Length: 524
Image (cartoon, rainbow, N blue to C red; front, side, top):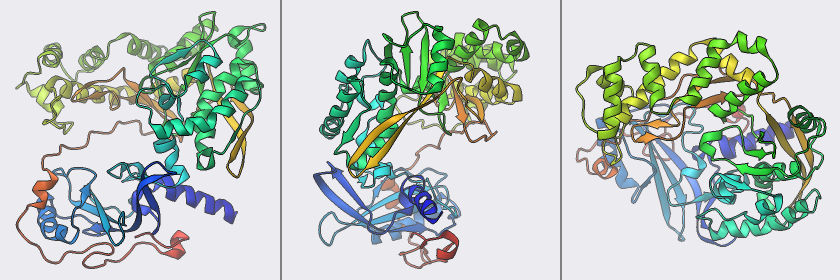
């Protein structure tokens, strides 16, 4: 049990808690992991005005900063302050040169008692990478289909798929070196054997979790044993004599397909989704859920369709309405705007003009958009706010999320997971586990924040999927505008006394937690 708890604590520190909870001595590198161009070592993090805490307002923070920043020369900031910023943290590293110290800062609205996840390991400016396997998996090794192949790629055969690995534009020499290490294992897979990936070191978790999204559909097409779920899917979707053999493989664009990592495009015209996710935080697309509605019709599940008839109508309209029309049509029906305001929003999107319409001004007040962005558009600003209000109202119907989950689990989608064993520097695929019908649990709701912004529209509205069962399906609001530059903050002339920091600053304040309560020394 103690070993298990230590493992959980390790994972929590390396990934979930982020930069602000690094261990003293943790190293970061630039360039190649095996031959870095520079290295720095974490020393401490200081919180201002303390943990927890916040200055009275932005101006007070600026006044404190004008004097304080002299103690931290050449700070590199990971974000810009906004009028809502009332606190900041400064991280100190030793290096890259002997005797040199490097400082990074980030502004926050406040310093909370627990700052877990507020500054991610991948967000240190300058391309610095945390030299830990859990952190390197997504930011350095990059073995997901979206990292390996051009966007929305389709391959006729497994051999074509493997040959195309590493052809995505912008692939770096370091990525190509990592791909070279996994090539022999992929060749074994094409020969019909469970592959062994040698000399992969810290890359093992990336092979299992990320490369597994490519290995899975290839193994399925080749007729390898994928478990009872895949066999049930074959019979149910393709018939008793059907076969996955000969299917093409499509890796869809991430932003549009959420839970689906790949599709098998069968010669009969059927598209079978493959999901290696299904965990908390993933997203589902309109297609994932509308496919489930269509499957329910084909199977004659009339009772299910009747039970959720109003919700089915919404799901199908979402698939038919354009991204521009969806918020406006529903906004009018819900009484948020009238038809004249809807028409004006469309016109503003085209012309990027200004508006004195009180209804449009009210919508825009929901989101503190960055109006200095050259792509900022008043029409998109109002549309983004309208889409969020509309989505919130749709989500207020408890049967809507219930229906989405039901039809998501009715869709032609196989949940597929890769199993393996690890040895020093080697990972062996030992088999696969599959589920069909899919068994997603939790809550589903519309989320307009991922595709609607004040600078444009990116795809259709998506569905937020929370595998943990959290029933709060409201959507977040944008971060406020960066009204003041870091340089301006540095140049504030008024000096301030009585500065305190959570640790290592002018004056140390009381730390929350200790070895007894946390099971380890508290991180500075």
